[in-house]
Image (tube, rainbow, N blue to C red; front, top):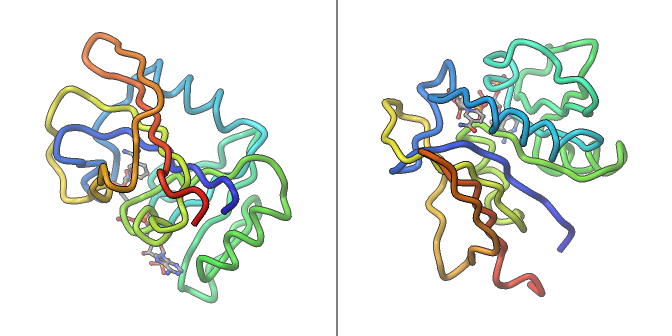
Length: 160
Ligand SMILES: NC(=O)c1ccc[n+]([C@@H]2O[C@H](COP(=O)([O-])OP(=O)(O)OC[C@H]3O[C@@H](n4cnc5c(N)ncnc54)[C@H](OP(=O)(O)O)[C@@H]3O)[C@@H](O)[C@H]2O)c1
């Protein structure tokens, strides 16, 4: 199983957004996101790409859409999960699944690591991250901050 990391900020209950934006914009989280992902590849859904509204520099972006007409000059377009992974691998560097809810679910069985910023609050919104099941995942690192923590989870069954 090759490395595939989900990167996400979420609150209690796993809420990650309301469909238009994510609930929190924390400077240290954004710096960490940049540090971890620069030089790598971001795979994201078309809605998340449009919510961000720009291409993040220093990273290859692969956008998933079912729309055969959808284009953007600075990203690679993929129409299914296998094509997204193939494009990401050919770009080189670590691969991050960057949301949103549909795309985290699409790759859930293939993820090997979760880089989670866990906010000590509950957000309004109906877009969620899949439940992190302790039969599948173990916490391998945690850095606590005031009001949030950076938590790394790794898949237990890596041999599978
Ligand atoms: N808290 C966080 O860390 C975080 C991170 C990222 C996003 N978010 C939030 O998550 C929300 C967006 O999530 P979302 O679930 O609504 O949308 P999404 O996962 O960003 O994108 C969904 C879109 O991806 C495409 N798609 C989905 N499955 C596909 C498949 N199997 N093959 C090809 N294309 C596929 C479709 O695009 P088309 O409609 O074009 O076909 C679909 O509409 C926003 O609120 C955003 O701010 C939060």
